[in-house]
Image (cartoon, rainbow, N blue to C red; front, side, top):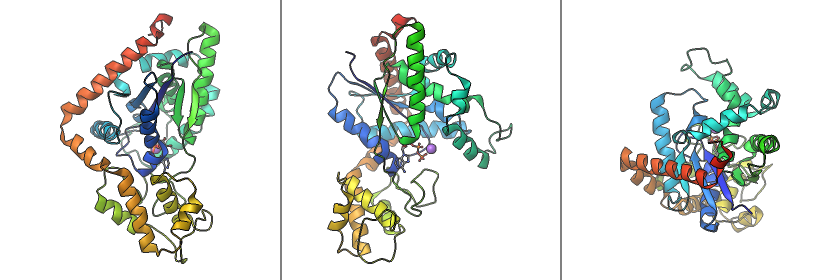
Length: 340
Ligand code: ADP
Ligand code: NA
């Protein structure tokens, strides 16, 4: 049997927030701490995916550094996982090209993510001199690059959020097609679904917490304790007395209950609310803030320390990661299949 290879990616779109942490990054660290030593863990800053959205090169450069720094700050260890930037490993784009020759256009047309992203970019995009409403091949084809990211390392398991499940199905499909056409090469990667519950915006419980959300509606992982407390103190709640867990009737309070529960490793949100039943809203918010400050511990401080190290530090870590990734790829004997 093949040893486990876990691959997961994050786009360098800015400093990650509490939703990214609870929905993805926290699991990355937990996997690192729980995985047996023979498991390979690859965590990739997928900058080639990020450029499917128009942006200034200097912004992309900054966001790549911010994302690399945050992966280290949350506790991922370069001696235990392979932390690297996608564009430093050329084989991603090479395998993508090979897979495009197997990828039916009508299957890509049925993916929903590019439609969402195209609609979003139509709202901004003074950066795009060709006019923003034209669908670019890169945006349309990026699920194939994602398949290449995963298959390149013969990954067996891929942690993703709900919104990426469709792309993973495509990757599984392409792996199967490749194997049937050219011989058994890729394990069919398992989808490891992230916790279903979204962390919602602090100001609008019908929107997920997002980098592009309303001001003060998210908690970023680089925020100071003071900033975290301030944002939770000003979070939208309601005027109903007492604390209860009722996602339909009291979505904003219930979002805070869920944050408190998840930051303290409890999934029975009714029980969490019951413990807070007698608290006033202010005391309840203080308790939520305590859990976030405590749960994020010194991530913010560590992040700022790494960012102060200067460009050379992150650059060389990233380069080492990329070398390790290429070495792992060779170790997986993919080259024997004359692919890379
Ligand atoms: P954003 O919407 O802030 O740009 P991304 O789309 O880059 O975030 O998401 C990166 C990862 O974080 C994905 O795995 C996604 O499922 C997860 N994620 C993003 N926002 C949330 C949220 N509010 N709650 C839970 N998980 C989230
Ligand atoms: Na996004």
